Length: 395
Image (cartoon, rainbow, N blue to C red):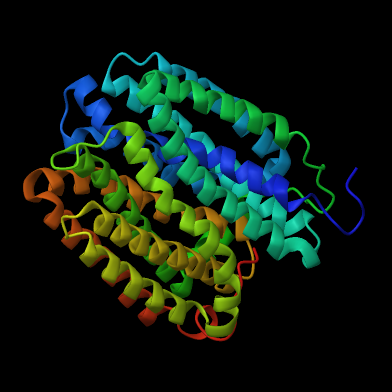
């Protein structure tokens, strides 16, 4: 039993965040291999990532409603248990279409952990430990994003891409076991009145600050996925010709998020989301310009700077979501994630098409435009409550 006033260990939330996010971007390091396996181009193979993020975008608002009705812990446990099935199905996928179906199914289930666990932290962790718990969870998701890419590339280099999906199945099974150790809710009150859900949704859709934040989230992840999806394809070509394991190693820049995320809280508290967003956009644009250079070390340095900007932008957006609403927080988080992963789904297709037509220079221009637009939208829209004063990563 959890000691009174303490709540579960932040390490538990970090582990749960890591294990669920292993599933999201793991195929990115496999894209060149899958392109050859299924004999498709850059635009088509990107759908392996886009299928998952599209499903996450579609499912996130509904998961918020489901978690409000059934309980956060129950949704997290069942989501992890069911995630094992599409991972195993992906192992035996004979075509790109069937692989995408398995990936779509994964995307429908991932928000069951993501959205419900955020709500669980908001209600079940005492206020004194809430910020630490959420920071640990977000740090875990960043670590999971790196490990998914890195381990998938490493396993595929030693075995095959099929083995990478066996790894995801085992990770989801481990997540199910850990989720069962979450204490049962003490502060949860089921909300099953459709009228209340409709009222909450209507209030959110009339909230300019929340809608602005959703737009910023869409553009942030459009930038990140457009960058990393095509980066693997670029590095697989001459003059680099990196293997899947070597490309997975390049994704170590993603680990910078483990440093940036904990630092973002104090920075946001001192300066607010708008200043944080402008700082992030400046770092990303400088990094993206650097990726136009040919030497691999400069490309990696540029990707690192761009990724750091995206991580800080995401922290600013998460803070702005919670500052812009006073009720139906699970639904608000679900709407934000819907927009956020919608950006990823679109980037998975569009960036591949631009790469095929215009090469890396075209992709750099595309994602620089999306990141700059995120900054403009945020500065214009985060006024008043969502942008002024202090902010934090609390749910």
